[in-house]
Every structure is written in C-alpha cells, then in structure tokens.
Length: 112
Image 1: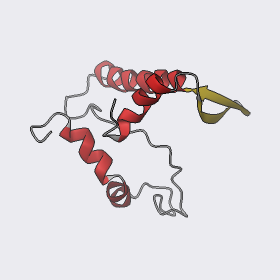
Image 2: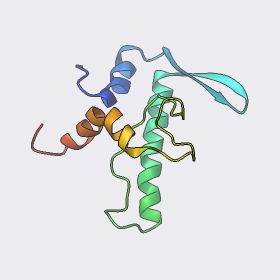
Image 3: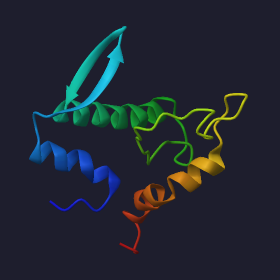
Image 4: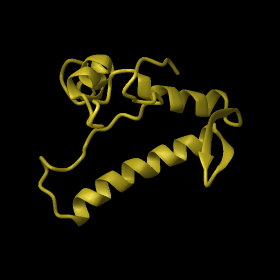
C-alpha cells in the first residue's frame, strides 16, 4: 500500500504494524497506550457518530458533517490557532491544513 494522503496512514499502519503502540493518551487521569487497530476503531467510531448525529437531528444535507480530518496537533494560543477569547482562528487552520483539506475533497471529484 502506498501512502498518498494523510488519512491513509492509519490504514497503512494497521496492515504493517498491527500491534505497535502508536498513541498515548490520558483517560480518567491515567496514561493509556493505544495500538494501531484500536486507533483505527476509534476513528471509525467517530466517523459513524458524526454521521449518525446529523441523521438523528434531521439536519439538511448541507448541515451534516460529511468530511472531517483528525489531527494530532494541540491547538493553542501560543501556536496561533486559538485567539485570546478561545475561538478557533479558522483562516490560520485553513492555511495550515490546506493540503489535507484539499485531499478530502479531491477524493470525490474528477481531479483525482
């Protein structure tokens, strides 16, 4: 498998390193490690939850979350992604993740 897009990395890791610890997280005050297939499962669950939420709330197609991108970066005031009033600086995030966002939408288009 060739990794061409950022979101292909998890699938690639599942095949190549199925039991490797790839993420450490703090849950309920304790550090836990996740192996590749656990991370894949969590990201899949999040995708399903976002789509289900839109359907249950009877949101219109334009209101439903269709595409999303998970990033491992921590957004902070110091790094510039969040303002002093704790609001997202969307223009900075759009610039920072422009390539990944483009990849999300090119998948369904004729450009691919």
